[in-house]
Length: 366
Image 1 (tube, rainbow, N blue to C red):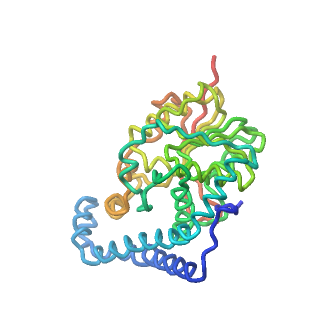
Image 2: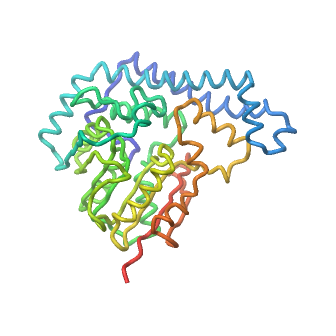
Image 3: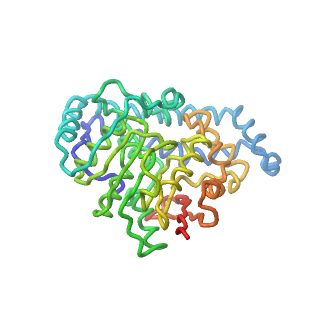
């Protein structure tokens, strides 16, 4: 299955819009693939040999080549969002009509539950992660789906800019991994935590057609789009506006609890709460799998640590550094999984990217 499933909510750009997107794609690939590695040259060898990430970061911050590169990288990210935002705004009224129709007459049998009383963390409202216009929690009116549409369109272009293979979704990678590790495991109740626009929720409904699939997020605009997207694809997913720290649902309710690329955008406190809820919600013998980028400071040399700090400083990644320092295996152990916690770094099909999987099985009751 391709990373970006085809559905009727996807916008076909005009020739001019497509040309702008291709330009941004080429620009991002050049900035990240050719120019960024050359920044190592601004660090004197004697400083590099000391392996002091703070000293290297100080030099990078004052370096003219780094400042030029940083301005280019920031501008390219802004241009990327502009390149996907313009086609969406041009067709927004028609897109809202399609989403409303799919909500009123669901094709696949999924559902959407929004909670207007849910308190959204202030940081999520104020910080537009990855510079996404309006942020994940953009919610201008009761039919607003722009946050979800931007997330999917921008994510697709960003992945191409990072040269990430698009032939396998993150959810498919997890399912492939589970088939290898637990060949007889067939979940009947699945929960996707912090599901965003639902791109990692729908593959579970497709790959486990007999399963009852639920997905939660705090952002209403993401969820409206996610629900319509799933219905358009033809798979049933039940979307809920809930906090991963207090998702509701009964104890022992799910066979499989997952999250995808969410932890590096969460505070350590939120991650710890999500792990505790993962344990509470799983049935004995159930499996939790939390997937994210391979960002562990303990594995990175000093230059890489200093270099990656740019995303924290200038790409609106407020928890980038804390995620890189957090011991996720210990966090899952403390949540109740104890000695069942395992870690695997799994290459995506095509070999373009490795993903970190932190996973555990809830012990059977004795």
